[in-house]
Amino acid sequence: MNEADQLVIIPVSGLRQLSQFIRLPRRLYAGLPGYVPPLDMEQKDLLHPRKSAFFSHGRAQYFLAMRGGRPVGRISAQIDDLAIERLGENIGFFGALDAIDDAAVVSALLDAACAWLRAQGMVTARGPFTLNSNGETGMMIEGHDAPPMIAMPWHPSWLPPLVEAAGFAKAMDFLAYQMEIGPQAEEKHLVPSSLRLGEGRLGSVTTRVMRKDSMAEDGEILRGLYNDAWRNNWGSLPLTPEEMTAMVAQMKPILKPEHFVLIEQNGDPVAVALVVPNLFDIAGDLGGGPSPLGWVKLAARLLRHKFHSARVILLGVSSKLEGTALGAILPALAITELMRRGKSLPYRMVEMGWVVENNMPMRRLIERLAPEPCKRYRVYDRALTAPAD
Image (cartoon, rainbow, N blue to C red; front, side, top):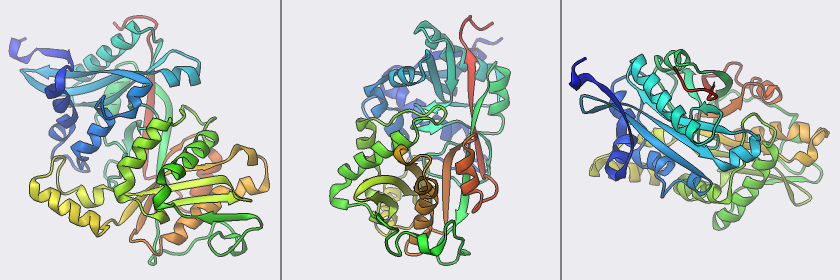
């Protein structure tokens, strides 16, 4: 092999290589049908050790695949101390996997990540996560041509087979569903009209919107309910106060009070849903690193709230209502309230994801509105008990 064509995997070191790591996907996938680059600043919030809340309880090593002095792939290897505590196993994560269509590149990247995790005492590599299950989750295996959605990853169709060829097997799938909302949508009801929130009281149960002057406090309410409701879902990890603070700070410019549904019983929070506008709607045509004029356009669109789609990122019901009639209908009530609010917001479509494949109660509820998932993401496992061949 010509030395110039030799494949080398290097650990990322320094801000210059970190910047190269963050920008690489939009350079590898430019022009591919279905790919729309996220903003570099959005990815920087996920990956930069000084910006990502993950690093308050985890550590990571990034790698670049270089050939002929040019990057042809990337991957992260990370250990989340909260995950080890929650899962009770030494499971390490990999993520941020992007590469050209080359089995040797993908295999070498995965081997590098696995070797780092093994050296840290991990016995299983699981992913992709950026950087854990509270961030971007899974590898896209279906839905490549669907409209892009905020904080949902995109991968080329060649990548999953190459991951599987490198010894990784399916651990779990996550699904996303899209449904039409707003004045033009056909009205569909998940609960009888007499039980719909927003039209009055349901006994002692009421709903309210987000308080813009108390977003941090409402964020803590959301975090508590989410952690409680999702504690038994496959692979779920608790959101930390630092992660919620970062989420509120990042989303504050695009959130409206109507995006937050808090359901209370006798004044106590019992269910919550949060929908966020789709940043791709106003930034998708500007590239990952907008020009100065691009930033001006983005600011103007943001000011006018020029979004036409959104995503439900959090939905949860208090565990103290498990097994009760009210607990059974609260998810439907929360979704119905979001649909009702859609008539006063500019959105024409809302996406719900990620939904764990084996969460059949939630799937049955959502599939009454959207019978088929629009996207599928796969999480893989590989044992690390012995070095890869």
